[in-house]
Length: 478
Image (cartoon, rainbow, N blue to C red):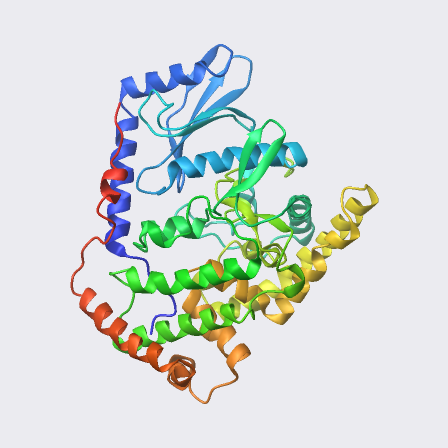
């Protein structure tokens, strides 16, 4: 049985086709000239050069160089990749300005931004920012030498320990500063005026975007746009429900057999049972305050100069106030690669991660002591101890499973099932058969209905986006 649940390949192909068609239009001369003129309306100076578009996972950027030595970039969410472009842009601008005002983390300076309606180019919502000059991103420095751009990055196993500590230490300072930003409920920030922000929108996560784009989840299954959460347990319940909704609604590549479907179904119901019983959260932090959390905070979004000093942290679009458990989890990106994609399997990933984690916790403790001495951090805001406890207790895997739909099955059966429901007599692949009795009679009956439905869908190979999804993502043209 597959350890991971694959995303819908039909949706993936359609998503990429929409992105490619949209990017192709950007190279037209009249489009480039219009973009250049638009940047000049919001950044003073004599222009020197407008570079070709640079595409990331969710955005396309244009950089305009100026005679004064500075640069500005304009960034557009990519149709086909970004399912909530207006919301994503608004959230990112609010959090960048909040972080800029409350920390010393080097974030981009926002010159101007606007919605689709405010963009005369017809290219959707946008952000114009000062460009942060840099030599490399942190992933380039940490990655294994010789890996091609297309290869998934893996931490260089032979990296010099002094160099690793230098880089980890700076990243640790970013995390410590974020930990000082405490908010009363879970959700995304809305800027009210120059000095006031409120948590007034749902937590728009990386996972929510991918569930709709590649998991073909109906948007109506996500929290409402203005829905926030007053407790960690209520948010964990919602995320556990989404795991089950994902399995139910994704038509292609969700299961590969009847038993595979039963195994995935049981894992999700048991996980939801744990969430509803409050066994996945910590009572002392359940009601907050809550920490700022960025789903996409990783080395590839951290910019460094030629001396390997951090000069910028970018791409804050999937950032929100989240359960404290998220911030108290050791960062998975210490090895660059995620555990579900590790070449030698998740157990091997955990062994390698353990050694690098100790290095990270060492420099985190050192940075914490410096921050406390300088009055930037209170003693109760330490991160090293809760991160160590999260790893040792296995809570690391709880928060990882609740946030990662694709990785959920592997994490549940390898790391959570035995912890919460006791050791089984069967192999990992067959242990689900021992857990059937933990379901109610109605849940078991519903399981067979889901199995029948999913097996019928495997023959269809149709795009399961909502009817208006394709029209919503239609590439806007000048």
